[in-house]
Length: 178
Image (cartoon, rainbow, N blue to C red; front, top):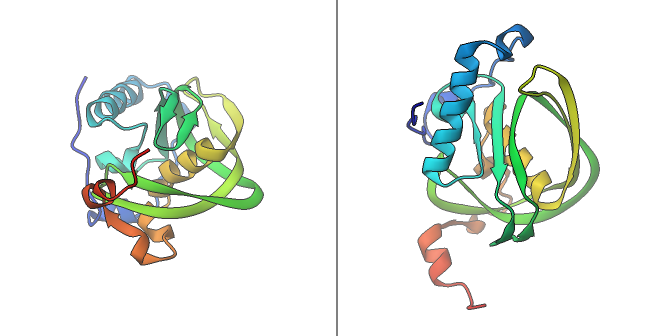
């Protein structure tokens, strides 16, 4: 297994729409290796989600793995490692909530982003089967964030008020103690 370098905002791959993955390619050994390498890269970086374009692989693949428990977003539900091939996101309720988001491809910055809080994701799973999942709250935000690079976007593209884009160390240093 390998740890890939994570490309950063400014790299052209992050601004291109990623190519769909053929169903016949999902079960290939090279794809299994790529997923294992993405997981290792994700763990090494301390993240909870990674899209293939972030390691300069412009394909429609994203992974998430959430340990669950208390976090800066409140108590969050654990999600086992999940791979999403060719995900299609449908907003089930347009009501939005905002979270301070960060990204492995935008190191050192955080931005306040509003996103719909109830979505359905239709995708092909790691077994090559069609799957669907309904998500709400933080997990709805997480998948939208992770799917952004598949569409040539980053969370910074969704910030409505640019005064809400901050350096993480400054932001953390000036948060009220809890």
